[in-house]
Structures are given as structure tokens and as C-alpha cells.
Length: 130
Image (cartoon, rainbow, N blue to C red; front, side, top):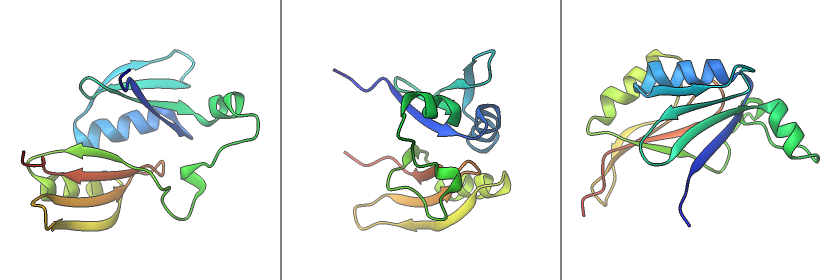
């Protein structure tokens, strides 16, 4: 088994794809004609977005909407970059909210946290040295 997709439920798939393209330079791979599902090129594992209405169809009991939560959800996506401060600044410039400025961690990574306009918690980090 391998991880194939990370799917984030959002208010507007097109807006989320556009933000992640502008803020992080990720290329849009697919947007369904309905506008309710889309994907970004991120490497082997696909980062996808689905409309809340699809979540409502999939989960009859409902789901927690990150976009409606005052606090970030207890999960994140991590984007790896060699220049966390520049990526962090660009994300803020494109509409993300800063949660934690770039800082060096004891294990050698530089890490920061931002929250996308759709509520997604994003960690920006340098690669972990092997």
C-alpha cells in the first residue's frame, strides 16, 4: 500500500488551487468541469481539493470544515523548500495567515506555519538531513 492522495475539503476548489499555485508555485494538474474536485502536481502523492458539498455527500454525519474553524485543525500538509523565509513571505503576500514565523529547530530544520485562506494548515520546512 502507498499514500496516493491527500484530499482537503474546501469552500471553493478553484480558489484553493489558485492560492496554492500563486503562493507555492504548485502547478494545477486537473480541475473537474463541475468545479468540485481538483488536483495539483506535487510529486508522487497528489494534493487534491474537494468541495464541501462532496464531503457532505461522503460523510452523512457531517465533517469539520477547516474554513469555519477559528483554530487550525490537528493535521497539516508540509511543503519542503530550501528557502523557508522566502516561501513564508510569499504565502503571506498571497493571502495566508502567519501562525509561526520561520525558526530553526533543534534537529536542524527551518520550519514555519501558515494557514491558507481555505483554512488549511501548511508547514513550510527545509529537507531533513539524512
